[in-house]
Length: 521
Ligand SMILES: *Cc1c(COP(=O)(O)O)cnc(C)c1O
Image (tube, rainbow, N blue to C red; front, side, top):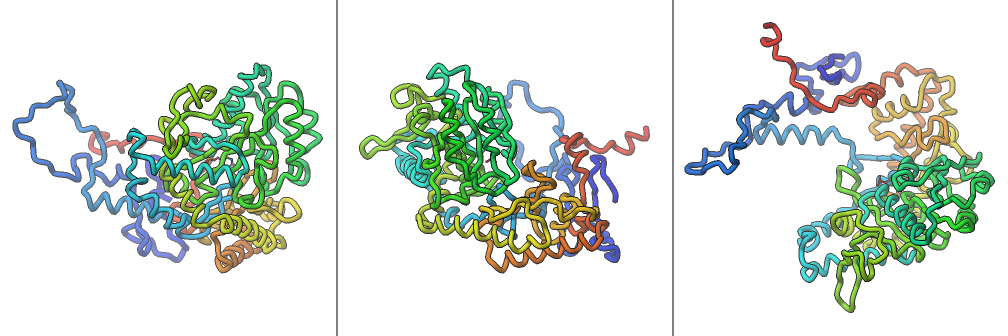
């Protein structure tokens, strides 16, 4: 494989040994694409502006005198560059995206239509309140839906991601403990199976982390939890259903135990897609929990748009909610922006403005178009789909724990024992089958974990095709075809990359190749 200076393979390797390498590097209509710096010419720009006449520079002698080395492209070149790159992306709009714990569900187009309505899409965060009443009403209405679905008295709407919501909840707990003179409470219990953001959040908020092991059923070991209780315990951060895809059956007892030592119960609500309309977290003794609107409520993730992590708070914590928040006075909506009046005990401000308007309008559209019965149905279908996958694969792959699962199916790598194929090889082979791999090597409590979350969006036909691919791969692995797994992916534009090298020695900056003539001198 030829490599460029950054150690990246420059040309896609022909898909099969018989395939003829092409002169262009393209394969059929799949276009090879280089970095923008490699195709761009610094002397060129996409616009051709006339020299302004009689205009004096206002830069006070700070005018740029040298070329800064940004790649210049004409408009059609720019267009093709980004369209070609976009075609190398895998997306939920293309196929199954079974990334466990991420709830990669379909983003209904109705959401997009509403989010683009001028009053929502064009609203400016500095607009006077009197001109943004509709937008504030939407935030207020969404907060009402969230409180109803979770059975909680209050919600902080501003956090912009799940991890940000965790921070909000833990900061509210810290503020409450401080207000009550409980500054000796510094220890937070975190189960072994937790998402990495949980211990990171607790540490960010100044707590120390104490890990609780899982039992052989993939749930919190209650005896171990009891042995860790003490006066310095500030709380617990628990995910339910947990990251093994299992309902924490002792959750009410866990809540009681934590409360009995004066601690608070933070629940990571990223897996709420397994509970909506069936279980209200408020009934389980939870004090704070974030929701990922970009998971459970169908707003796009990451590159598709920013996320939102509204965080519900119990009566004990709600006065410490972050600023600003929306309140309704009579028939008018207003933002509480300062630490006085209703905001007096707030722990402060964690966002410049009121949060992600585009996510709010999408999530509320999703909720209202589904209605309470539709939301419950979505949850039930998500759990049914995961169990269909688990049941259809359990004779060729190894489910990590017995029994039914919630909205995601967890397998370990026992079925690959002695095959020479690892979880990573298996995931790479899924790419050749046209699937984004599932979450792998997480949760850490399971060896070689493969966590599959189909969501309710997949039809039975699509699930059957996916199951067929997974079965065929599992059978191929067991028939001693390790070499082809280790070579996978062969059909992807880039083949297997050196991920260790990429993590340890990332090349984050493009450097121009040394000019040949210059180098020769
Ligand atoms: C996704 C996820 C998070 C973090 O949410 P972000 O929006 O990515 O910050 C936290 N916990 C769990 C269990 C998750 O799946």
